[in-house]
Length: 261
Image (cartoon, rainbow, N blue to C red; front, top):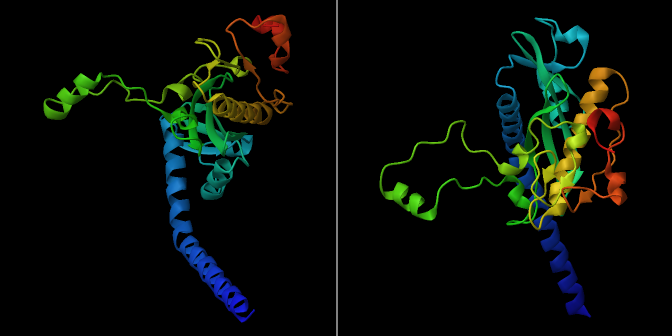
């Protein structure tokens, strides 16, 4: 009995010490992690809209040249998905930005979406995902543009020229120039929908749902009217949907205008 009591005290002391150690490490690293995440976020903003001179909330009174805003507070709200932003260049509004979230296989995936003034997608950046390595994490995979032999030659000889525009992950690149009505996940190659990552359909759908959420927020904020309904995407198993798949057609989209049912 005495031994059991002693062991309980020892285990309790170890648990308290471990908790204090974890809290101490968190306190020491949290601010640094936040700074790195903010810097990465601002870099993503610039990558999507390199022509932008500044970013501001979507309100007429702050879009005017020289309008005063609390930039740090606004960018933090934008990063956390609490605001919609406008990218403002020398010729006016270059586009709009919002962050959306979707539930992946093992994490909440956060995506930054840049939209053109016409509502189509300019580009997206995955801000956070902690999916299964080799499966869901392939959402940020960059496809190799060289064979193994070319890579070995490059390692010991002259370095090949980098491709124009740099290497970009193939999955996010599918979203470029698509509109809300094309954000449908399919399992086969497609030019007007989103091809799922092999063996990672849940992650593919989560990213697509996050993009839909962000694009819907942009639509609502910029039009002043209800944007497209944010119903989760369902997966189509063929490039040509059957009549039974008509329920995946997106609400808020005029089928007569898009040519879809």
